[in-house]
Amino acid sequence: MKNCLKELRAQRGWSQADLAARLGVSRQTVNALEVGKYDPSLPLAFKLARLFGLTIEEIFTDKA
Amino acid sequence: MTVSEKDKRRGWQQFWTGIVLYGVLIVGLNVLSGPMNLGKPLVIALTFVPILAALWAMLGWLRAIRAMDEFQQRIVSESAHWSLGITGLVTFSYGLLEGSADLPKLSMLWVWPLINVVFVLANQFIVRRRYR
Image (spheres, rainbow over the protein chains, first blue to last red):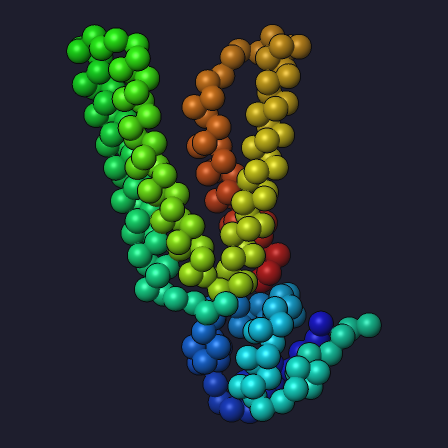
């Protein structure tokens, strides 16, 4: 899946560590999400959506 | 899903305490049981004592894993599967070769270290690289 996490994070001026702390995950996890190497679980996707005030579909898009 | 650093740290502390205790008990019992000329049943019983420390270590390892976030758990899980698969293949194949190609018999003592070595190598050079 593609996502716009890096852009959303940059808009808020957060570092990967800041976002990780807000999500309660490691910085490595945020990095893997941003580069599209790891797709989050549904609970983590909802957490991201709530944090950025968007829907999951607005953050993640299917590559196909 | 959440990272509980405190729980993770406690888990690792428990793991390393268990491992050190296991090593001390193994060496200590071997040193003590040698000159004491204990009977076979007692030697077998004493051999199982360090396993309690190893179990304590294993529970610490599991506690640390449970405190990891979902991505970290995936890294550990994939590394463990690599380790399980490769160790299984190597030991099973060598076991067959011991019979068919008359290779020297190796002690089962090497299985556990092999599991650990393959886990670390797979973790560092295959799994982590894949998610970089």
